[in-house]
Every structure is written in structure tokens, then in C-alpha cells.
Picture (cartoon, rainbow, N blue to C red):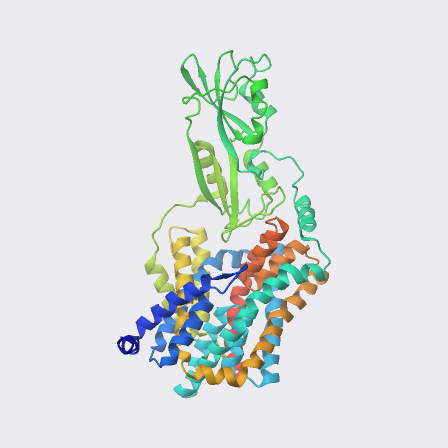
Length: 562
């Protein structure tokens, strides 16, 4: 039975690939405290283990899977990447540049200190910085080297080993540094610092319905009996409660749709749409709450609205509310605002950027009117524009193969870099013209997660038996150098961001996590501070560093293989 299984793996390497993915994902899910290995590292480790039986896995599989991943990263980051290239986010862009440049310098320093080859050096950077894109673009660069296939195979094997050895400390080290060490170095209490930033962003100001940080939306029916309410206009009732709107009145069995000038009569039944805290005293001020389906059956709508208006982009929530609503009641409430899938703090002075997604709930006509001013409603379309994306991959690959010279040194993006550039451009264009190049979030996740996990599995399988010898020869040096590459760049960037750029600590901690493309450390800060404010710094740095770190792969190979 065992012989049959081993023969099946050797004769059909695709079985080994899927087995490594499956076992790797299961391994990556195992929780040890708050830590888990993750699917990519798990797949690579299982690939290394299965590869010990000796397999002939087509090298082209690695390129195909990495193409899916790097293109999806570019597509997702495109709107934020190009949107962040402005004066308002210059400090965050500069922070990413400093971290990536410092990281590259430390990686090359370890190369000179320990005399690593190109494979060990690239794997060191990818694992210690937990950025697998470095390994992918470096692999493309290795394939272009003027060396024989055996030497290329050895470099790729060394890269997989270095990644596997350094990844564990890279993941844990960054979470511990951002979540525990960095606040202590700056002598910052996370909860107190978060409250200070929230006050700066206007949490203590009372705001109307479009900018309140609540999502507890309720529908109630009240019979008008109080003398204080009889004879009042609907507009007067709403003026008393900023987070309430009267959507419908039932009078004598007749349904009267919303009219702000309508005056209430005794016995009227009011259909109220409000935040929960706004209805507490309605029994006393209007009359008793009753159950009346007709009064509460007015049409409402939830909509995800993508901010595309140049007039509103770069404005705060408070400013946008003023520009959109003015003095009129819209009967709409914000459920959430997300940027790259991460929730922003719903505070009056939170600045929104093009591509942010505002989830509104309210009366249908008002939601549609606001959507027309804000941008466009994101359609729940699950179809992807496969033709555009595959063509983008073709064009990106061709662009990546073009080369130029800086002095005597040949320079090219590589296929990975070309794919990334194509994804960035198509993602940016789609954010402005959604009818072209659709790639729903679920499809983006599938491209990225499956592509990267499968890439890790193939890299592990290709490393094969040579991995053991590589671990024996450079294992200790890689552990030490990996720890230095993980800690030194964020340490330098921490002090640069705080004392040179003057960033608020909460934004700085989120930016550090984003600059190393590591969401787990940002989630740790959010958990400890009880605030979403670190997201403000995370998204810009995440988009910029995804590009810069991917570019580091070919640079590392060019320097170390020269």
C-alpha cells in the first residue's frame, strides 16, 4: 500500500502538490495560544517533508501559482497605492520607504557577514519579513541567471530552507515587537493613547446621524398622545432628536408617507427609524409604543457605496456630512466604513479617501441620492472579468521581460514585477470604471490565498532532499540573521516615525504593521487598545510595502549572484 502511494506521488506530482496544500493548511490552523503558523508556511513545510521522497515537480507550476498571487495583490492594492501618492499621506509613504530600505540593507549586511548565496539571502528576507512575494520575485530573477539548471535548483532549495527557518520568528517577533516592545520603548499606554487620538478625531463632539459611531438601528411605532407632541411638525420632532427620523404616519387607517411639514394629531401612529439610544424618552414625549406593522413597513435599503467623488475624497466624515446633507434630514445611518476590507474608526475627523467603502442603511430614496453624490453602489456581482485579468497577466509578463541598463548592470522588473504592475494598474482603473475588470473580493481572496499557498507547497517540494544538507550547513546562521532582519527594520522605523515624522503612536503602530504587510500585529494593537485607529496608518503602508518588498527580490538576487 505504501509503495503504491509513493509511486502515485512520484508519477503524478500534482497529487503531491495538493497533498502538501491540504496538510499545510491544516497544520497552519493549529493554534498555540494566540499564534498559528498560517497556510503558506504550513504548505511549504509539508512540501519540504513530502519532497524528501524525491519528486520531479514541473518548475512552471511555481510560476503559475505565484502569478495568481502577485496579480491579486496588485489588483487589491492598486486603488490605495495610487491614491496614497499625495501630500496628505506623504509621511506614511516615507515610513514604508524607510522600513523597506532598512530591511534591504540589513538583509544584504547578513549576506556579507555570513557569506550566504542568493537563495539563502532571498529566503532570509522573505521569511524574516514574512513577505512571500520576495521569494516569488527572487525566484523569477534566479530563473534568468546565466547558470546551469542544477545551480538554479540549488538556489531555489536554499531559498525554501531559509524561508522555513526564519518565518516562525519573523511572525512571532513582529507581533511581539509591535504589540508589546514598541509601546514600552515609546512609553505609551495603548488605551490612553487611543483615547487621545479619538479625541483629536472628534469622538467627543455630537454629530448628526451620518457620522455617528453606532450601528444599533431600530424601528418603532408610537401613538401620539402627549400634549407636547400634538400640533408639532415632523421636522420639529426630528429637530429634538438628531439620530431619529419619522418615516411614516398612520392617521385614521390611512398611510401618510413622510412629509417634514406634516403636523401631528392626537391618535396618529408614527413609524420611527432611529438609533436605539434616541428612542428612550419617546414614550413620555410622544406617546406609548405600540405594535403597528403598517407604520413600520416603510422601505429601507442597505448599500455599500464606493467613494469616488473628487469633491469628497480627502475630506473628514464631518465635512462630508455637511456637504451631503446640509440642513435636510436624510434618514440614513452609517453601519461601517472600510478601507481594503479593514474597518475605519467612525469619528468625525476621520479622513476618507477614494476607494473607501461606506455602508449606509436608511430610506431607499435617501440612500440612492447619497450614493449618487458619494460615488457608486458596489454591486453584489460574483462574476470576474476573466478576459481582462488573463490579458493583464500576459501584458504584465511581457513588460517584466523587458530590460534596460543602468551603467553596465542589466535591470528588469521580472515576470513577478510585471504582473504586480499590471495588477496595480487594472485594480486602480477598475475602482474608477467598475464595468471593466471586475474581480470580486472573494475572487481576490481565492487568487491570493490559493496562489500563495500552492506556490509555497511547490517551493517546498522542489527543495527536496537537498534541504537537509542546507539546514545543517547554514541553520544557525539563518536563525541569528533572521532575528536581526525581523527586529532591526521596525526598530529603526519606530524612532524615525515618532521623532522625525512626528506620527501619533497609534497611527505609527498600525503603519509599522502595514509596512511589513503583517495584519496580525495590527490586530494585536487593536485588541489591546480597544480602538480601530491603527487602521488609519496600516492601509497606506500595506499598499506601498507590497510593491517595494516585491521589488527587493530581484535586487537581492542581482547583488548576491553578481
